[in-house]
Length: 310
Image 1 (cartoon, one colour):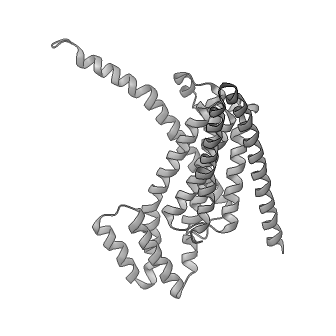
Image 2 (tube, rainbow, N blue to C red; image 1 turned 135 degrees about the vertical axis):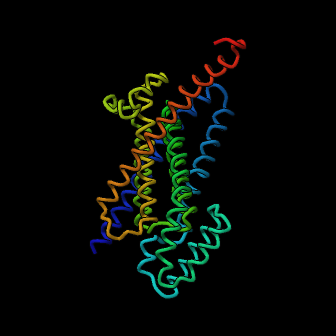
Image 3 (spheres, rainbow, N blue to C red; image 1 turned 90 degrees about the vertical axis):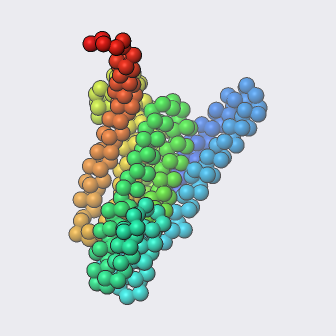
């Protein structure tokens, strides 16, 4: 009974967040539409059409699409036996062959795991985790970087919220596509609750007192070197960090085959992984926008210097 009550409250919370997000988006979109109408009515219509396309293609489609994937996780493979075990081992092998670039030797290796009987699940889980994880990390990294740029540069709450929601729902769908399966309904609901909460945060973060978070968000030197507005840089970093943690949790739901790990350990692991990737994104921003152009400039100057000049 307790489990059912928790599930009901989770659904109520999700619906409430959806209503809040929709109301906020509609309110902001109408405000921008009225401004565009002052210039020309066709600009207003085009804006509303663009919003509809983004909502349907970037939010509704990936949100619904996740539920068509089968429910599974590597942890369940340890508890499966008989035909169910063979079915999921074969599914993992097929998914690796379809979604991961494997050498001919690796393809034969992974197919050979199906003939190992008792050792099949352990060998296959280790191989699957080793090959799938880099693919997932690349998707997660690219999405977090995109969110950092969008919400750091954009000064409009509608763009922030649409960008956040679209990027995160698409990321969850990509994670399930790459893995070939999805978390349980309850876990998916929790992820969606996080996404909607993050979307509201993206639209209202500018109202918060976040100045004291600037050193963490910009690593001190990044904001000064690039001349980014401190609050905008921090907003982008916080949004990227929440996305990274959400993605890390989703990945752990699916790829964590260690039944001995507690929820507290998994949460701690997701925090550490999210902070590590965020630092990498901020560091890359410094290298791309400051160090590399400087090296290129002085390298060109050196190449253009007269022969024999020391």
